[in-house]
Amino acid sequence: MEQFPNLRIFPRTSEINSKGHLVVGGCDVVELASEYGTPLYIFDEDSLRATCREYVKAFQDIYPNTQVIYAAKAFINLTLIKLLHEEGLGMDVVSGGEMAAALAGGMAPEKIYFHGNNKTPQELLEAVEAKIGCVVVDSFHELDILDRVAANAGRIQDILIRVSPGVDAHTHSKITTGILDTKFGFAIGTGHAESALIKAVSSPNLNLRGIHCHIGSQIFELGPYQEAIQIVLAFAAQMREHGVELTEFSPGGGFAIAYTRDQNPPRVDEYAEAITASLIQGIRELGLSAPTLMVEPGRSIVGPAGVALYTVGARKEIPGVRTYISVDGGMGDNIRPALYEAEYEAVVANHMDSATEDHVTIAGKFCESGDILIEDIDLAPTEPGDIIAIPASGAYCIPMASNYNMAPRPAVVMVKDGKGRIIRRRETYADLMAVDLI
Image 1 (cartoon, one colour):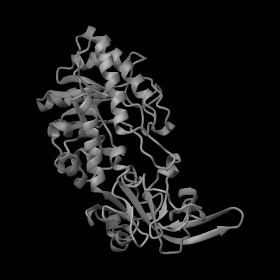
Image 2 (cartoon, rainbow, N blue to C red; image 1 turned 90 degrees about the vertical axis):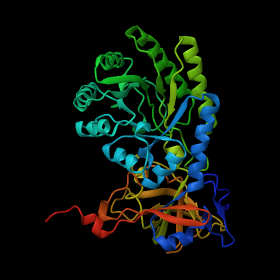
Image 3 (cartoon, rainbow, N blue to C red; image 1 turned 60 degrees about the horizontal axis):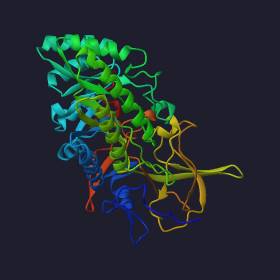
Image 4 (cartoon, one colour; image 1 turned 120 degrees about the vertical axis):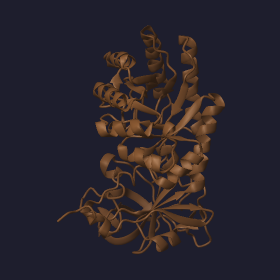
């Protein structure tokens, strides 16, 4: 079998050193594993900053009045928030916890957008008191609560209305959000979006700034974005009869990344060209005023910048069936393969110059038969103690991690210029019991 042919789906600074080890951000990842232990997640700072700048430039070069808003649910961390703020990005959050972290990390309140289909009264109160920039309203229930909370606080709260355009993004069913049958948003086709807009305009303590939609995640096609934009802009034009003029518009995010070598998602500039062209055409044809455009990349910023490291342990060979190699992590730190059949690549980080001639399945250590990280992959031959590196692991792994089997969640290290620094320490057994009471 061939050697691992390229590092395209690894962070931008990745290379192979003279020892045949994987290097990210100038750091030998085998040495990082030895220093910090495994499972370990590493993020390449240069990759993070480069992708942030790529988004800002690609959209603003065509449509200057664009704001890039990072989707915090992909991965949130105080160090990352500081980096995003330095790069000029805003942040969308989906819970009180994410909002608290965004504020603690130095994100300007006016650049925070609060999403979610069932925000609690307490969360909405926290948002109003923090003077966050915008609440993206998702239900009639929320309109009532937010109007009351804002009134009690003596504030006028800016909002967007989230609409569902009825567009299929052709992605996995569990990450599709723009169709009619979804828990998110007011459907345009049922008339609920129009009713919500009328109610928002008549709410004395709410200021409707515009419309938001989001059609899904890990979207490889440009057409669904264009279709959704056409539908939403046509809806916005119709709403002028209610005295509403669109001043902000967001088609959401969902920009895809390559998890495997055979995947080729559109480039950032291709997403930018498709989205801005549809927006410009729509506002011209419908006679709309040019709104502020917000785009919400999350996965596509942090996903490719992250690499997960594991240590190989047991090996089980079933003749004529399968060979398992087990690692010291699994569904506790990356539930995506078990949750929706997510696929990954992997390499043996301390044998990058060896031929991939061992056909194996990488299993996790958790007490579930479904705890499989990668099924049927060709790797360099492994022995216990070798280091497995899985690229494109920066999004949704740590945020969705659990303490199943009472396993401490992994440490996270940021690397740059040959130096690594802990940005999230590994949990301890004491952490796991800290909230228990006897």
